[in-house]
Image (spheres, rainbow, N blue to C red):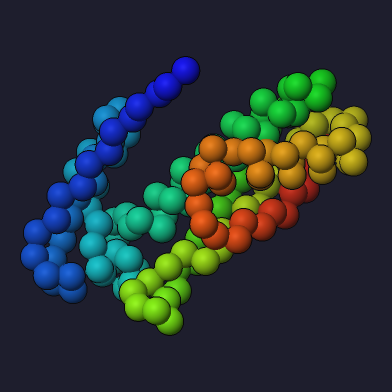
Length: 144
């Protein structure tokens, strides 16, 4: 099975004074503003790191749900946060060296060891995790 999704970005102007918009095929994002100020100065709008985090958190949560199901567990809820770190690259420009996932999963009566194994499998096996050349860490909490 192959699935293809499209997102687009439009940019005008210089890096600091310019501005851009991003849109997705689904329409979930439609001409959402992004730019230097949104990325580095906390202005309203999105930025690439936020989008990377959203993609990773959602993909991990879905992968974990699948892997838990294969292990005979069904989560009442999975709440995942991805913290994406952007740093200056000593070789020039910027890079994302790490992404930290924090997930809180509610599965009444679940076995901790089985849950931990599933969470690690989801971290390694999520398609978005496989995409990044970054250290990916995980803090997984099982709530009953």
